[in-house]
Length: 181
Image (cartoon, rainbow, N blue to C red; front, side, top):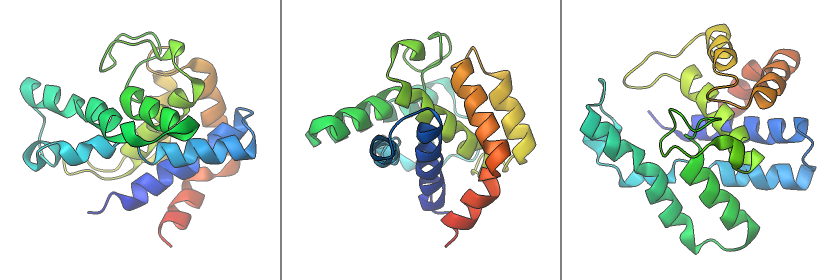
């Protein structure tokens, strides 16, 4: 199964959430462009780990975590603000709000706000799309999960804005319609 629809969905949601958070249309578009590169390091993870249908062993999970550093390194040739944003997103999109439970222990509360925006969008899309190791979640369960992680994994303010945006704009059906075209 291709990851292209999911990557497109992350980008669309990222741009929408950036706008909701007060970023200009130009900056929101830039964040969207940077967001679609967030998992580029996964191409360097061995397929038997990346595409494993079951739970990863602790050793395999340590290898999988390196997709963030590999992505950051891969994007090192991008210059300017877009390159800086793409590298930060690739490196830190799995960090948690206070640092506990994230990949590298860096508190997301200390990172640029756009990293937290992409993190929310990535997690929602990860839950909504089927993976080899899990079925797709129903939208309400995915939103309930996001809400339950507000203040621990996610910035509570961003999570509230995100959930309100999803519910008031019926984003999920709109996203699935757009990415299927």
